[in-house]
Image (cartoon, rainbow, N blue to C red; front, side, top):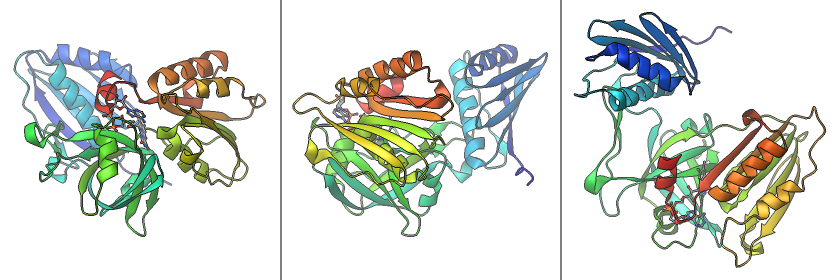
Length: 362
Ligand SMILES: Cc1cc2nc3c(=O)[nH]c(=O)nc-3n(C[C@H](O)[C@H](O)[C@H](O)COP(=O)(O)OP(=O)(O)OC[C@H]3O[C@@H](n4cnc5c(N)ncnc54)[C@H](O)[C@@H]3O)c2cc1C
């Protein structure tokens, strides 16, 4: 089958020193993809698409390309945000023309409405959201960012600027974003579920949102992102309750031939949820009791796992508190020799820091 034609957009970015900007962009993007330099330009490629850059007097000409609207938008946005960040003096004024212009909006944003909320366990609340296009969240990643408007205000959502940047509402309309796994999507009913941990911090926006979510409340959803389910024969799935939704979703997707070992840290038996899977899955619940969440129990359990024979395609997904994630990442990378393609160990939260701060720091 022939590949779908790429969507393309062009911009002429006026700059006092276009050569310096070309150099800075290439230096930056080499850490995120493939960069090819030419005498009067360059090409930047990443998993979303590519951009051709050409120098001309007083400007940098860019042609961005992506396989679909989202991919093209991400290429344009990444370039625009870095151009503004790296520009000397006056911010450049430019706009993209071509496929999928700014009026079409941010392709990975959807407004959603709360349909209902109920407790899965005493510590986990399921919020069901409905929207015009839930199918959008079915591929491209397992997670999304919930954008919560300030209480009592009509939500104002982010918009796409003509130069490709996302313009966020500020001041009284500022949104709070928190990342959650999309636990389940039901395209026929036009709804999706997000399972939120009701943790102890009384002022936490995400946990509070889930605790008080009522039918008709509106939220924004940006995504999906954060990687898809990786095909393997043997899985290690581990995390605290924040990773329980992703572990449950992955478990449900595995074929009968797969083997999986799951370790989930929760406070007590009352916080456990049955995992459904066609695969051969062995689940161990690690009870931390009165200890604060984010203990070393996951690391200790992972250390004792009997690893599959060489040649068996193994994949590990771990999500937990940052300090625990760090030691588990070191264990899997250094002691088990798992590369980046075979393991994803992520800090889902960080003790004493809000989700917003954790994202800014990483
Ligand atoms: C890829 C990804 C997927 C995620 N999926 C989910 C999911 O499906 N469900 C889910 O509930 N969470 C999930 N998380 C974690 C969630 O985003 C964070 O827990 C987030 O900080 C919660 O926001 P909040 O507003 O409730 O608390 P924040 O305002 O972010 O934090 C306030 C305080 O509470 C502490 N805190 C935050 N989370 C916890 C916790 N779980 N236990 C104890 N203390 C905590 C913080 O350290 C801070 O001191 C995910 C995170 C990532 C990166």
